[in-house]
Length: 455
Image 1 (cartoon, one colour):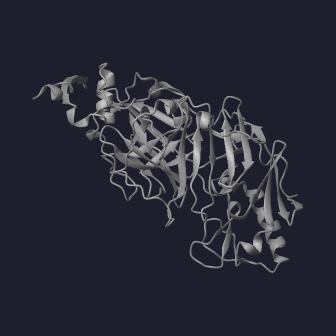
Image 2 (spheres, rainbow, N blue to C red):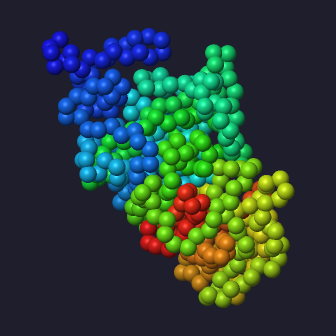
Image 3 (cartoon, one colour):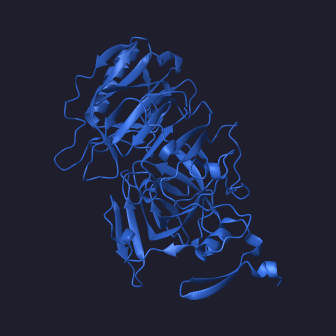
């Protein structure tokens, strides 16, 4: 071994054993930098590895099925770039695309940079991925994550803060050897169970920026997943308000997203920290102690617009969108839900008024097995005069076009209403309704802002 190689020999203590790692072949990589920083040694030529909180970053959003989407090879992409001191505290980026059920982010986990595709979700906290062994798991396109190949992987122990901290819908228990287990239930009869762990996550750097970002996150290693999950996705990236979310773990004070409509094939961004845009009219967040991780707002009413003529939905009781005494109900934003969800009475009143309004234009409902159950033999041009109005606090949020309707999955010349009947008292503004406007989450001032713009 020559002198240059021996300079990269580093002793590590992990899992009760000492390891000697030769970093010579890893010079300049994240794995080498993790070793060197841990022991106060930094090889020349390597970029700075940033762990600081409140760093701004932006995730590009594109439509996954677009022929114009940039190719993204997780195994060969230059995920970590050298640092430019002028930009060290500015923008970090990772690529996001849109799947059939929502928006996804590509990430790499651990020392072996294991590629995963995560659906990001503002309606829940916990980030999780399917992990080996996975005896009861949904089939998916990518291999199941094998945490044993990562030298930076750690189990969360029962004495750790994340095994004790209170969290919305994240249950914890302990094994005989004091490892922390978790269970997480979603509102649509889906649940995941497994081990609570931590490791380093990477997201793709945006072309033009020169910065390294690498941070250890606590997440769920799921060994059982029950319910209807998307085969394109390896798990979920939680962006809720609770302690397990990316927002809380990185102490991010603001984020925003501007989602392009699915047919545009454009690139846009979800932005965090100083990069977030929180301008525009807004409404104050409401804390619901039953589900504290969700982004609740005060919804006063909904109405229909026909050529700017407002049609009130008189059959909806005034307390429909409020919380009941037990904390159920209310109105919140959720990127993990594609469609608007309305309580039963509001959904049926909207359908009745919409069917009557469209009938005046000779547009009739047709039978369909589509998720919303409300489809019409028409084009987007035929319904461009129809809008929905959500009155949130004192702000009218107007939804049009693909925010309200979508093309039928199976039949050409058929469009469907992007609204579903909620199985509970909840009202949800799903991801389709959040497109074509910037939505800012100002968590310091407890506000959500809405600004119409081309994404």
